[in-house]
Image 1 (cartoon, one colour):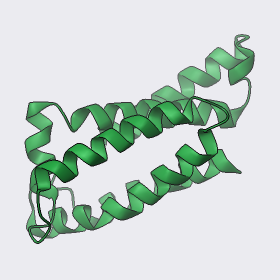
Image 2: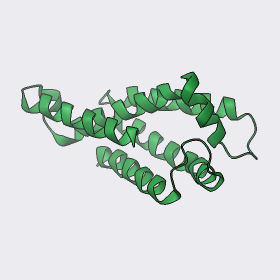
Image 3: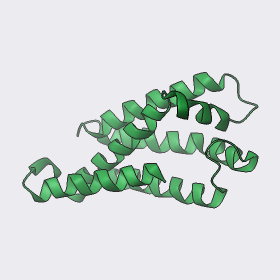
Image 4: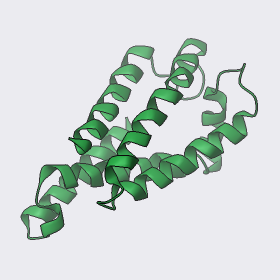
Length: 142
């Protein structure tokens, strides 16, 4: 739920800034890119925070090797994607890459839900949130 809050708060703050005169944010798409960037900064940094890292490593399906390395790689990709969203020239590529990343890590969400580990939300809410994030990223490309 926290990533959704980060997305919404980041989007609303950027939209308000746009309405207040920040020309670069005076449309919904740039504001949505900021919201997504805030969300991916939040989730990306969680990959390196000791408290959350343990949970994220626990989400990796047991059949995959080096879950610690996979969590590090996905965290770096999320942080890089967040930065890329904030640069107009790279924003579409960053959004596309983040969509692919979200699709690639979805099996970890399924595995975690089935094994009731880590952030053990039921699969339905996990799937719905992932769909919201993918759609939000896709909307920034259109």
